[in-house]
Amino acid sequence: MTSPSSPKRNRRQSSVGSIDFGTSPLSIQTTRSRSSIKHNKELEKELTKPLTSSSDSAIFHQLLLSLRVLGNRHVWPIFLFIMVITYAVYFLLGGDIPGNPLRKFLFIGHAVEVPLSSLKIGSLGEMAGDRVIRNGETFVILYEKGKNDFAFVGFGIIFFTFLREFVMREFLLPLAKHYGLHSKGKVTRFMEQTYACFYYGITGPLGLYIMYNSPLWFFKTSEFWRDYPHLLLPYWFKFFYLFQAGFWTQQSIILMLQLEKPRKDFFELVLHHIITILLVSLSYMFNFTQIGLGIYITMDVSDFFLGLSKTFNYINSPLEVPFFLFFVFIWFYTRHWLNWKMLWSVSYEYLNIGPYILDFNSEQYKCWISLPMVWVLIAALQLLNLYWFALVIRILFRVVVYNVKKDERSDSEDDEEFEE
View 1 (tube, helix red, strand yellow):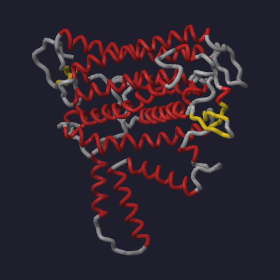
View 2: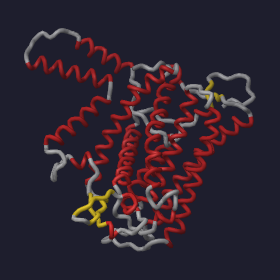
View 3: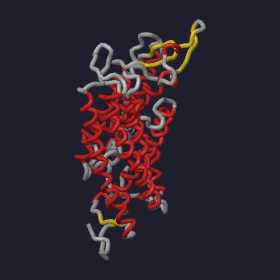
View 4: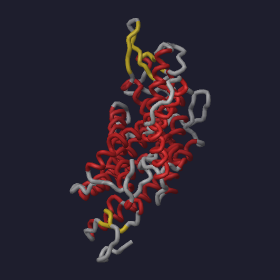
């Protein structure tokens, strides 16, 4: 890397946007090789030829050819088609009726009605559960865990695959061109980070809203363990948890398939996804969803500001530097201060608040077995965050002390035009 005082630089790029954080979501291939583009043009040429026969087989062949061309141009219609067919069959089978095999893929399941009088005042269920009145008695609709949750998460993977490609192709790619971005590397990174802003701009406030309507507000860590085990969840709490599980699972699949070029911090990125998936799955299995909600919020809020900071960098916004300074504060507060607070809670409050026992029959897993698992995973996540924060501080030092916003960074993708 060229020193701050060096008068000669080859390619220059803002330091603010030069770090690839592991929490930024990965993209499905939004760029394609020239060979695949050439092949698709050959298919399009064949598609323009007039039909030589009006037979059913000839028409069917033309239809399949059209679908191949459409699939090569865009990925999202394939997943949209899968979702539309799933919903269509669901309604053909009677819709919301007992025994519909597709309901578990489309809606949160395992609902139970609990008498309001049986719930502790100020508990999560009493505060946030939906209420119904039957025969003069008030019941609260809450949701248990169950095997159908896997089906909902699986359909969520399909949904997020569609959503990402659709938003990036149909909205963010034109937006990148509007801001004058043409190189493949910059266009792809711009779309990734702007999509991150889109997603985390929804899940961050939603997570805070759910926490606000619970005893946890604002990161009241003692409530992570009070009244454990937390077997029943309000609708939006469970929806948020499984919705996020679908998102992170989809991102991990893309990472494993290496559908984009590995980045400099590829190892840290893989490790981060492994830790996140383990935290999500184990917290749900052990009924530690309250602390899981806190982890989700700290990641989502910081990732929103990270994505927006890098987006400002790619479009050379005058807000780039002041917003980066604000992002540093947000990152430290959410990824470190609040995470340290939760790690402290696991170290001390975990032992002293609520039952500390292993009982499979009552689903109580808050014991000596789960304690080191949770502690090590959160601590490992903190170490990764410290690694990325060190990179942030290095950039902050260059910006504040040397007033240097430019860095030499070799990236051959920047010289290649983005091809649709």
